[in-house]
Image (cartoon, rainbow, N blue to C red; front, side):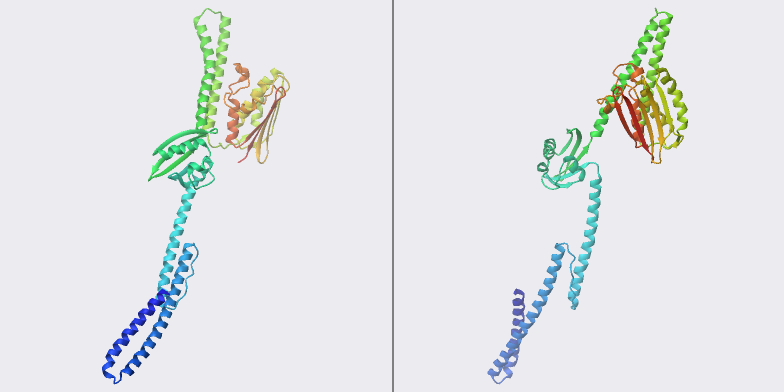
Length: 438
């Protein structure tokens, strides 16, 4: 309406000016003033009608254009595909063509921005560390790992309000107060390393789960402690017996006995060192070694190594090994069998020790069964730990190095296999190992 009134006023004013100039021009030339005023009145009516009609036409036309523009803008605001009208007017065609080109450019730019955002989101969510960006405590950025580590479900709001763990609440309160922070905390059996820096009044926080590193460090420290203790026992015995021999004053029979003790402790020491080195090599190895082994080649060696020992103890030694080739190196198969069979014979005083090795299309299976002293339920969860033995005495003939089953576990894990142990005190044990073919 305002546009119509403005246009009507402009056109009417223009008509009045034209009528004025016409009146001034014709006034000296007309003989009757009445005729002049009649002409002026007629012109006034004509110009008024013309001004009204032209104002209506232009205002409606402009209103229609404005409506189309508003519709296009509204569609853009609502992220909808805008509908561009068709005009015969060349100027309007140029106008809407320009708007259409601008829209296409914006659309292309938005697609590029969205693609970059998706790339950034993918990268951030692929990172193993939790990442947060805080603006005065409010979350601006949060990846999936941070949600998992902090137990956050919502991705917006104040970080303090979203946290339920009081330890994390205390840490983030410190983060918001300081420019830089590095801290390790323990929560519910897990260790976390938290680091924050300030970037343009925002806080970038990185959270890393270091539980594995902490456990490995503790395991490593315990390993060296246990290894030192285990190594000390035979070394102390060797030093004691050798010092006694060097001191003299003992007869030949006792000297030979002491030499035997020294020799046995040296063998125990060599066995322990060899097991430690084997375990170290297995822990460093990340990929299984490819190889072939004919099981029949192991049969004779197994009987020679353990047959006489079983016979001396009066137990039946039964071996059933298929004459097949398996895709596991012989050295690893022997290491598994020798450790399991050695334990079985050590802890069996009567009955039998039975070994089975068989192969199918999908897996290789080793079964070692005995009727020995068995393992109580309290020991079963720990028998594959390093230096763990069910015999607490220092008798090496019985207890061994405590590394044999740990070596077996590492070999089986290296090849993606599984170990199943069934045992009862005084009823024997059964170890079943399955190694799948890759």
